Every structure is written in structure tokens, then in C-alpha cells.
Image (cartoon, rainbow over the protein chains, first blue to last red):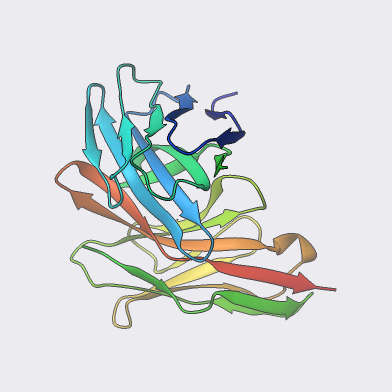
Amino acid sequence: DGGITQSPKYLFRKEGQNVTLSCEQNLNHDAMYWYRQDPGQGLRLIYYSQIVNDFQKGDIAEGYSVSREKKESFPLTVTSAQKNPTAFYLCASSIRSGGANVLTFGAGSRLTVL
Amino acid sequence: AQSVTQLDSQVPVFEEAPVELRCNYSSSVSVYLFWYVQYPNQGLQLLLKYLSGSTLVESINGFEAEFNKSQTSFHLRKPSVHISDTAEYFCAVSEMDTGGFKTIFGAGTRLFVKA
């Protein structure tokens, strides 16, 4: 079945450590996105990529980094510079439909900093 | 840049009662509007979308939303809710940016259906 796979589902990190969240899709979508979800704040865009080897900062990119070396993969690194990294992270990909992008989401990764 | 406002953070309702979840967006020339639903500890799923054409759009499970350009609203309605509709609902707008299309989400409305 086609879809988006995020791993790990749960992750614990000590302060000062970098951690990388995996996102893989087999939908043949060109665009991929990373969102951060906090209670009561909805989803905020971290980074997005429309094509391989190119990506753009979203609204809250500070303390995060990404790469897009393959169409199927868009990993997110949460660096030690991110002041409050505990959150639910959602990866999505999109296909153009009628001029707009319709998002397909993974199941998410919950990061907790101890 | 676009913004999305969901006016209610939580909506409790009894089973089989009607419900409306409100959503307003900032004005733009071209508007693409969406409702997504999220069940606990899962990702979001597309519920319905407005891209063009008829202002009333429907989902397969009985929800509908109406695009109202003059009021810049895209409220979600269901005439009779079920326990299984308990979830968080997000209104979203898609806009074109220098890096391509990106989607902006509202803060979400938690629908709680009581027996």
C-alpha cells in the first residue's frame, strides 16, 4: 500500500543531543513537508521541499535541519539549538489537485526531551 | 501571508445532535480550503476540500462545508454526529509561496461527542 512512514513513533532525547526523525514515502509525490504540533497551536510548518536537492524554511525553522537527497526521503534533524523540542512531529507529502496541494500525512513521531 | 482562525477550541455535543465547527481565513485572490481530521496519536486525514466550482462540498461520512467568499468563512457542519466523530478537526488554506505551495493550519477544534 502507498503511504508515508515515519520512524521512530516515540523518541526520548537528553538535552544537548541531536536527533533525526525519518520520513519515507512511496506515493511518488514531489513535495514533502515537516510540521510541528503542540497542544492548542495547530500545526506549524518547519521545512518543505518541492523537488530533490531543494528545500525552503517554513515559519519555525530555527533549530532544525533537513535534507532531500532522494525523492522518497525527507529526514528532519532536531538540533541542540532548538530550545523547546518536545512535540509531535508530522511529515506530509502532496500532489497537486486542481491547482492546490492536497496533503497526505504520516502517523507522526513524538519527541520528548528529558 | 494567509491565516486561519478556528473560533472554538472545544465543542462538546450529544450524539445525534447537529454540529458546526467554525473557520475563517484571511482574504486572498485565489483560495483553496481544506478540513482535515485527526484521531488520537495519529496523523491528519483529508476530510474535504474546496478548490473551485460549487461552494458546498461534502465528505463521504456526512460532513459538509460551505465556502462563503463575502464572509471569508469555511464552516464545517454535520446534521447528526456519532460517537466515532470524536476527534480534532483542522481548517487549512493552501497558498503559493516563493518556494512553492504550502498549507497553513488553524489551531484546531476538538469535537467531543457524548452518549
